[in-house]
Image (tube, rainbow, N blue to C red; front, side, top):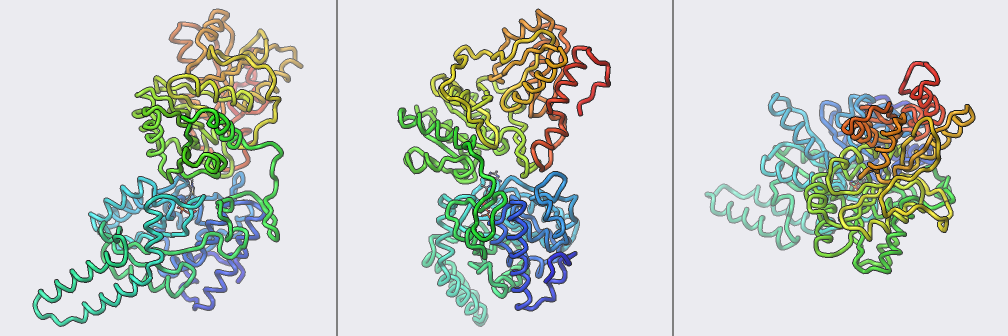
Length: 630
Ligand SMILES: Cc1ncc(C[n+]2csc(CCOP(=O)(O)OP(=O)(O)O)c2C)c(N)n1
């Protein structure tokens, strides 16, 4: 079938088994070829081809509500709802989003990017439906990884007791990004292999249904027998005990089985969970046989060999941070490392294999991971928690209440700080400074290169109180690790360049652009000082007071939200001190930044050497051109 001719999903309802199989095969081929060029979440999507087709065959989207958890596995849904032509722009600037997006299609009724939200959202959709007296089906599709997230369990607790009608699709491929972990995962494993139980249970149910109504006793007895049998065959039917009817396990690559399970679920009035077994990467050898999770989502690749293209020469920031901590952990056996489900992304796999007893993958459980770190610290260990900036958002109360308030020695590596690019607005790491800055005890840093990062790790491990080091996505610069550097011990800011007409303040990788802007200004005869605000919090107040006394114009540039960012902290401090310096800020102003190449996004925000130079001139009054943020 020509995938490009698909404009809406109802055609699948008329396809027979053979045609469905052909459609699945055509979609797979399309996905493999398309993602080879653009990159994307190929592994996760190849696993749900038949499942997504079946959902569109037996449910009526958009009146029936399909809610994809995380949303990275919605490519087939996008194809079936008429978006194939846009796949050439997948995850690119102004192109097709890698996650469901309401403005792209009426079939995208729920947006995500962070995991474990679908069940709570489904509860909202279902309750709204019931209050309005509507009759549509609500169908959250959640992976075995996302199911381990606390929110999903909170929602199950509510759904089961409330008996709300919905069909939960549990897409169990045994993988999170890395192989899934935890007791729930183990339990699903037992259910997965428990076909015997299902055959027996269905047989028992049929038998009970056929029993004559000879008073309630025999039937009650039979019901009790049926209930007790489940304990004979499995370690406890978790979902049924919660009040959610369990159907499964179902072969997620078999249309007949999928159809039978979905049709059965639709007849039941109450919450149902269909346990669908799928194979991540199905149909493409490198992805199907990936044991590490590399093919979950990745950049462009060569189809015939599976070789991933565009690998950089220097190591990634994540690898540098995790391996440096590992090096220190070999010398200090109180150092432990934690990750909430991102051992691959945070490059903690080396730590995991070298020091397995001091490594913890908590699963998708950011709140738990943060508080567990606090517990470890309270008990005398030195935990290093590697967590993406965007996912730390979910552990905020734990960071405040458990780590910061108790002033515990937890070191947080805030991975993917700043713009991340292709994953888009749900993943940009631009809020952490704003939400961390009010916390009284924590020290927040961002290195300008890996040499400074190593110094920050050592500083953190040897200083009491909570510490957080932000670092970006991408690769380290490859600087000389032996070069002399200004010590961090006095927690001062670093003067990177002397100058007299204005002070440009920034941190992290943005400093490179700021230095280039200073070069441009120098060519025009304008002399500016450049400051490396390596400690974002606490700020170097004595240096700021000097700037106040000199009445220097200040320009703070950051790849972060303006509200609550360093610029706003500097402005507040200077006005509280009754200084009257001219102050200007450049950063993200009250908007979500969509997916796209980071350089293009930075251009839109105005973080380019030309714009920084222009705005510096406006600040010091060299030019009277209109002051613009863009
Ligand atoms: C709160 C949160 N933490 C971590 C992630 C990163 N992440 C994206 S997908 C994924 C694995 C999801 O596994 P599963 O739900 O089983 O889906 P699969 O990819 O296996 O289909 C993880 C950890 C996330 N998106 N959200």
